[in-house]
Structures are given as structure tokens and as C-alpha cells.
Image (cartoon, helix red, strand yellow):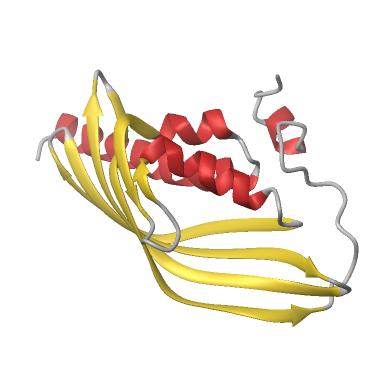
Length: 169
């Protein structure tokens, strides 16, 4: 591989990694346009029959609608492996998601550990998701006691991160 090919490979991997991160940000900030931007228009999402199967952009709508009923949520990805093949790529990312809900007086935490198995393509110079299979490896629901009341972070574009990233509406 020559220097130009290496540079292109590094840039492509970084662009795909950034889209994986932006997906997590979109569902945590309930930012539907950001989530839609990760997918190609004809992308397909398979989160299992009990969660969602259908249009990739539709899964963003579905997840954000469901997350509106939670108090807090946070998604992290790690162990990202990307295999490039010209204008196509495959990736596996490990995901850990934690969500807080209240049932009566009891605060509960839902934790999910799984993986995103993704197929990507570069169209008109832009990488996007063609297909995602979201696998849930294991999960749990447990009672929790919050240490403090969290009131700075927001689940919309008023979150402080939008200001520092220069994305205020």
C-alpha cells in the first residue's frame, strides 16, 4: 500500500468511526436529523423482531420516541473493527447502553451490552449505513439509587455539547 492509499484508508476508517459515534450521540440527544444522516436513504435496520426491523432512518425515529419515556440514557461504543473493500466496508462495534426509568418511587437502570454489525458504502463521496444488525448479547434491569440529581445535560440541541461543537440551532 502506498502513502496515498494508506491515507485514504485511514480517512475512510475515521469517517466510518465518526458516524458510529454520531449515531450514539443522535439517540442520546434525541437528535433525529443527526441520526438520519448516518444512514443511506435505502438503509435497512434489524434490531430483532421484538425491537425493530425496517428502514434505517425509521429506527432512529423509533428509538428516539422510545427514549423520550426514559429519564437518562447513554450509549458508548468500543472495539470498533472496520474492514474496507474499496467503496464498501463492514464493521463490528461493541455497544453498552444504560437507561434510567422510574417505576413508582423506584429508580431503575436498564443496561444492555451488544454489538452493531454494519455494512457501509460510500456514495457520492459520503459514507453511510446500508445495513445494521444490532445484536443484544445480554442485559439487565436493576434498582438503583442516584448519587445526585443531574440537571445540566439535555436530551436535545440545548445540551452544552452543541455550543462547544459549533452546532447551535
